[in-house]
Image (tube, rainbow, N blue to C red; front, top):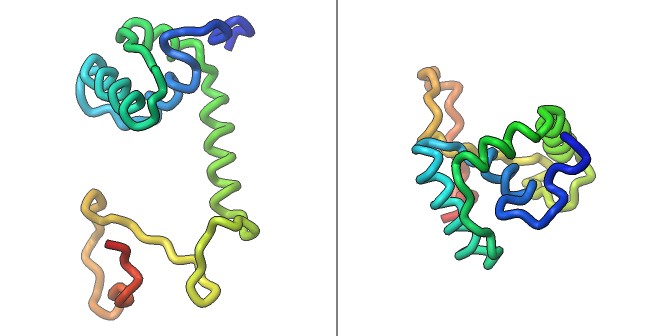
Amino acid sequence: MNKQDFTRNRKQPFSATLLFMFNLLRRSLTIEIDGFVRYLNERFSSGTRHFTTSAFIQNRKKIDPAVFSHLSGVIIDNFYTPENDTLNYLNGIRVLAVDSSKLTLPPLPQELFVPPLPGLCAR
């Protein structure tokens, strides 16, 4: 990234560019940008202005790939930090859940299946 990139007040600041890149884009960029800007403004009153597909592509090229390696490292470090006060434990064990509606798993033998414990699933 150049020292002058993202320094002035822009329609698409660095944070918006990065957040938009983290969204799993499924439709055309124009539709995704419209939905993203609308979501930010409705949810967070962010005042984010609409930006064009061309502006996004130009800004995306300015971001050094090392940013993603760094952010990935931060996420991994935070995930595996036992001193993290925001983690919830059940009898000393960290419990993680996965919504398998988007995950295809091979069939398991019945003896390997562990049913969820009653009362642990948030509804």
